[in-house]
Length: 302
Ligand SMILES: NC(=O)NCCC[C@H](N)C(=O)O
Image 1 (cartoon, protein in one colour):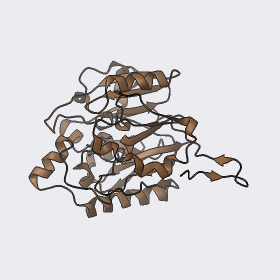
Image 2: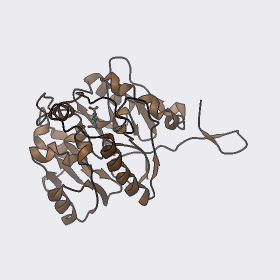
Image 3: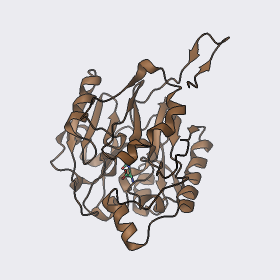
């Protein structure tokens, strides 16, 4: 059933005015993950597998507690926060991956992992507020997840990973002919310390010209990134910092960035560059191989 609002006497539906052109314009509306019921401990990626084997898998309580502190920061900045509806036994933390907005178009993700694809009905009550004419679906055999799609105004970077394939990249390229769409092959490894699950685990633009980058996360040198971002504007992180998900912070605006509290070196570097840093605890979430960007799906940035 559609949940669109009607502006006057039921005649004209008011759809969400989707608008996302980059990673940092002022955030107006977002879908934030829940983690209400994570389901069984999962081996879906090398990091989750490691924590399952080590007996350090996060509890639902801790995951929800961390997400609720993030939600408070979002709301304190006037952001409209939508939440998925719980589906029994599914993680539903990383809304980033299951769909994403490019300009005014909503792309429904086509996911490699069936257990992630099953999360899609959880956001139906939100996607029902989008004009169906602005919703697109990848064709059969094309996989693309939002964690691999990074927007930078006229440019779109698409990570080629265990989750997003070349067909997924081709689909994005064909769907947005006015953008320059770049395929960025990532390191895929069973070794949790080397594996890059999605592009947003190794690279993310911040502000209006800077970026956080783990340079060894790419299967080949991403020349386009070096062409678009100056050497002095790149905050380079090492492998241990990448493993803690330093690149996966989240921008509320070109100035305001939400960062995991323990990322001391990054926080200092960001402050030095004039950013306002909002600290939250998110270490338990990182054990599922995602962090702040991963748990958000921006709908409107102005
Ligand atoms: N963009 C991201 O890196 N998302 C994290 C997804 C983690 C989730 N446990 C998964 O393996 O699909």
